[in-house]
Length: 338
Length: 217
Image 1 (cartoon, rainbow over the protein chains, first blue to last red):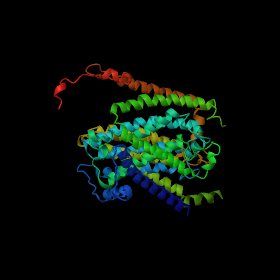
Image 2 (cartoon, chains in turn cyan, purple):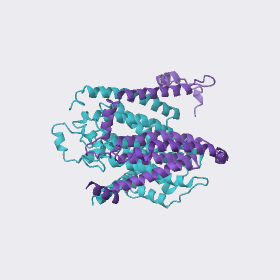
Image 3 (cartoon, rainbow over the protein chains, first blue to last red):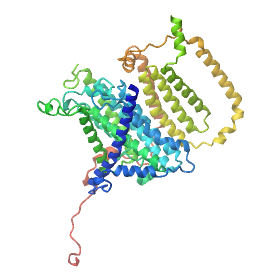
Image 4 (cartoon, each protein chain N blue to C red):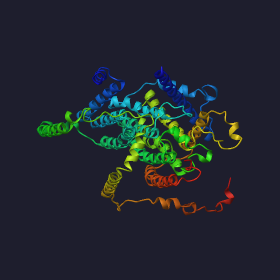
């Protein structure tokens, strides 16, 4: 019985993620459309609300073409390898106090491990396609993800030091107090580096050289069509949502109310469930992803590498020392609660 | 009583044992695949699978920090770079198989020596419950990460720091060996200078009168 409930929770979460991805694609087209003084999709359903389902239907109906000379087995397994870790990482995400699939102690580490193996799908897709463009895209993506993973990992270490725990629920509870108690303030450089690295990890603009449609057509998934392509799409957007919700959990107090600690106002909003705040914060970061795409031109490849290795990693190391000292000397306001 | 417990434990496989045997057989098969696969890319991917399943076995031992770090470091970083290199190699497989018969005796000899040595070290007389006690189950509050951290920075502080220093030296050496400044025909950018550039340095806005004032239509 317990097993069935767990299974139902897993299926429910996966469906919720898939639906979020569907509407995120619509939001992306709408937001970028309005930023470019267009309306965006507006034909299917009221105000184009059902556009994602039309797209999905189209992708399902399309033929999956396997190029001649491709490595058949790996070509088919690559999109699955891209999607599986992007979904598996959601197991440890708490949506409210105690509302989590697996309350793991090493949650932060688990997330880092899961996001780091997502790159295999991309590399294998690039190699198995037997195409120059796909292969170039895969190589770019591999180098980029490995580089930014280090900065991201260091940023997470900062969160770990500040919260004294790798359990995501405990990390949120350590930020209790008020908006000023949230970790975005004492860990401001790590917060910025985490989010920028997250954009780079998910191969989104302005770091989307792995796709680089003007140079290498569409990068690693140029040979994919139909549902196989849709899986890559799903994986990319699921990791975007994951990065956003993680940023909300680790730096913006997760499910905590932004009005906490303000007299009277906090009581007015006490009826709002925590998950609403969490999803609102997540949506803010998702909007940033879309905003970036509409605003910034693509980075040059050597500049991406320079930013990751020569700027982000030194800053994170310095700030780790600062956070360590602050925790040891119990810096008032943030780290003096024990 | 003790003997009776022993028998029942052997008869009925617990769910954990079934999981162990599943993972152990995947691990052994994929390790075998690493050395028998014709295609080097397949071999690397099988090695990734072997790492992943051994991480799962470590999880069964409640060593979650080691298990996840194995995935994070080896699968997520080291093997990615490995795959990166192997994919770019242009290996002619038929040529590689040419010398198979010639190298077979030497290979067999090396394999025999290795098997002999491993039999000495890993023989059954060194293991078993009377030699190594079965690991205790920990309570729910046990954190493998915290335990490892406290031991690593107290009891094993010196070995840990020395290992770190050796690794640092290795990194510096590797970089020093490969870093060479090519001065001919290469232009380097100085990002610091690039950032300092202002609009006035690059663009000059000139105001001038139209040359053919009267001819405008």
